[in-house]
Image 1 (cartoon, one colour):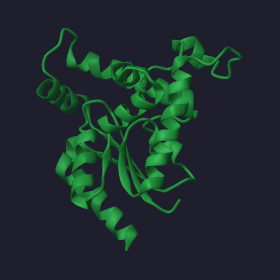
Image 2 (cartoon, one colour):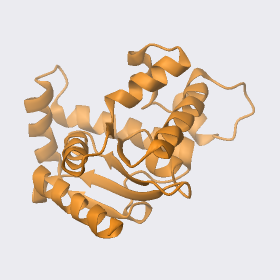
Image 3 (spheres, one colour):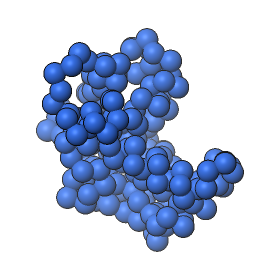
Image 4 (cartoon, one colour):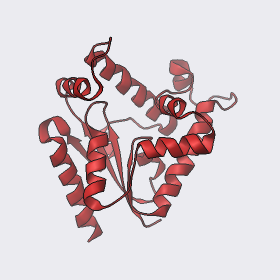
Length: 197
């Protein structure tokens, strides 16, 4: 597979989804984020909200994560992982694109010419941003961020056996709180365009 693909992994509230959309728009590429959920839901037969939630929970919680090489029957989450794996691979085969989340960085390793990006920011920046984007909730923004990041990390570790967010697992990590979302998008675009040339 020779298509150039950008994968965006991100901490909750860091603006990674927005960065991905801006990069895709600037480069004239399709961006798969919500569209990816829709494709997985359609192919799996599960409700889109279920697919969204299941994509951030390691099957069975802590004990299953601790014993990830279990001998039990596959779970719904395992089935969704297989569908997700297939859908992401097929999208990358269709042409250059940007894929946000869903362990695409891991799924496409060795399969595509993949620029793996991780977007992060400090807790204060992310807390302010999720209130602006998602509104106030009962739980504090900081607690929502910690919970969401913990679930993403556990899911990623369960299915990939890699540490989510660790710099050595990505080609570039960018701090959207320091650089700004627009600048992060510009940097990724520049790397992509230089590599393509």
